[in-house]
Length: 169
Image (cartoon, rainbow, N blue to C red; front, side):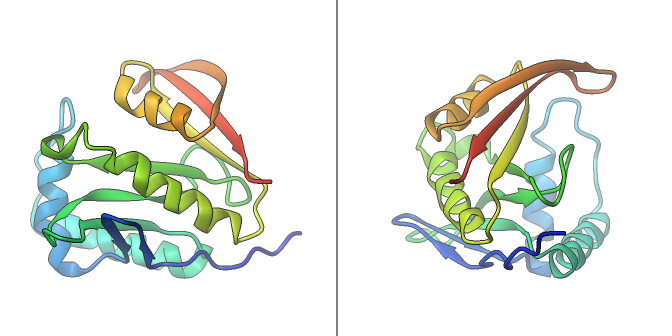
């Protein structure tokens, strides 16, 4: 079994800071999740519980989904990081979601590029991304980052999902 280094949990780019979750992120994370199509209404407490589960998973796996703040404004705008998701710990998925109000500014690409670099230092050789085929902006982000479509599957709950992969070597 291959052992991987722990991913850095604090990343900085020209415009963004990616950092571990804090309990104080719960209300904004609830609002972000609420922007999803057919979103269920969540309580702040249930989101606090989710944050605690994410922090526990980070301690266990050595990979993290990180909160994103804009450097100048200091506001929470979404998240980006590595998850097991539909893949494996050896070849995790990159995941990201940002508030609609900040779409179109290149933040997702910038954050995901920083996470790619962080993933590479763990010693992993490949990452995955799974994205609903309806989500054009997210598909463009992974394509800009050098991911290549591997396959498209149909899932009962998610519909058509495109699987993308990228070598880190």
